[in-house]
Image 1 (cartoon, rainbow, N blue to C red):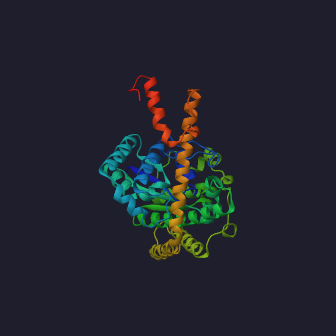
Image 2 (cartoon, rainbow, N blue to C red; image 1 turned 90 degrees about the vertical axis):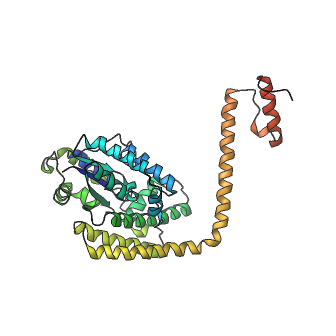
Image 3 (cartoon, rainbow, N blue to C red; image 1 turned 120 degrees about the horizontal axis):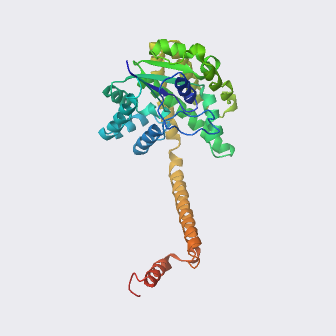
Length: 355
């Protein structure tokens, strides 16, 4: 049996550690990968091809790669084309020729589970899904540290609220899209505490086959570093609205049920469907409350966009001046003079009639 193992889960949930573990145990994780950095010093084990593929899809669908909107999945499905499927089939076919157990780690596959499943079937691979689980407060805390950018308190609060919503939506969609398929849910804390038990569970549950026995895994002991869990954040350390926090916590509780039930628990899945409806209502209420603020926000966005464009043009002119010392500065030109200057330069270069 030839397998495709998708390692997924909301970003900052331990997906890289899981993919690295499978790589250490002898499964084939095709590269080249994203480079390691301070946020992930052990490496991402994330295919650059897959990242580019999904980023293109996200741009076409008009969504964020970790989108908070329940209809983001539908938007993606509307953009999927036979050409995209053909590209994925080609990618999988190339790597299926090299191994009978191919691992692709990419949290963005939350939007394209069906596409991967169909493409895998076309090249003779059976899909298995490993979803990493980490408490939403820890995920939001980690994302705030490494990705928030803004440092003022209000901007960070908004970032935390948004990423809590993204965690909820991503978790709900991942569970729904993998339901009824061979899958496993793995707690990040369990992986760090006892990777051998986790590996043995995946071997039994998903039929994975290891080239290296988990009992002889000194190299893996060096790779699996409990110190990687650097953000043991709780809700008390975040400013998250109570209603959203309660939904996130309830989703987390049901994911724990699935982790303990080998991915199959009809009561948990039914409860998650109820929570998905509650989350959609919560989001609709938030959108209704914000209606009066939307025109002002749109106007501010246009102003910021115009300012960024002016800055871009000024920087471009500055670089041109560095190459042409006698060039006129943009700031010295009024808009009505630009045409005259362009014509004069063209004349000097012999490219146009004299005015």
